[in-house]
Image (tube, rainbow, N blue to C red):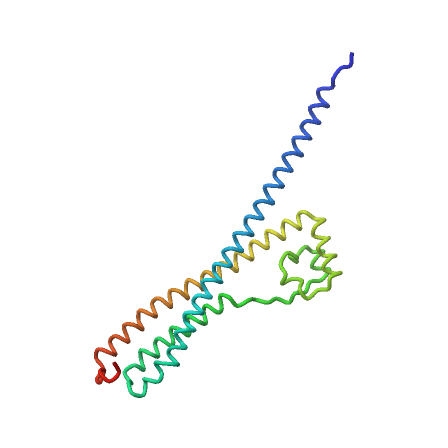
Length: 204
């Protein structure tokens, strides 16, 4: 009758359990990265959508000022100051909103030294869009074969994407605040100008 080597069986089971645990951890990391990038992309789309709303609204306001209000300034000079305030508010808000959606372009070039030093993140298109396919393919294989380099690139990608999102939302908040308070001041200025200006009947 053969004796069962419990020590050997135990070590095999431990090794199997460790592999299973590594697989679970790997899947958890992949899920975390996938969900994080999806969330970042959704927030970026939301910021661009909100900025586009501001661009559209203020473009319409500036068009209305030029098309309708500007024609009345000769006969109604008391509207010059309120119109100037509204124009400045709309133009400033429009500029801030445009900076939210304006893309930032990098050189799009990396070197072999950058890859060997693990300094280039090939998961971001801005680091390789000016490179030829052969060099890019080589760099990607270098990254894939080095799990530490791969995960490090993903972490950097999330970090810099978060920096971009933070900058977008700061500008977006400034844009909305400037527009909100500017419209309030403009309405007050128009109200005061119309109430206290002479010859209002002719304008109405």
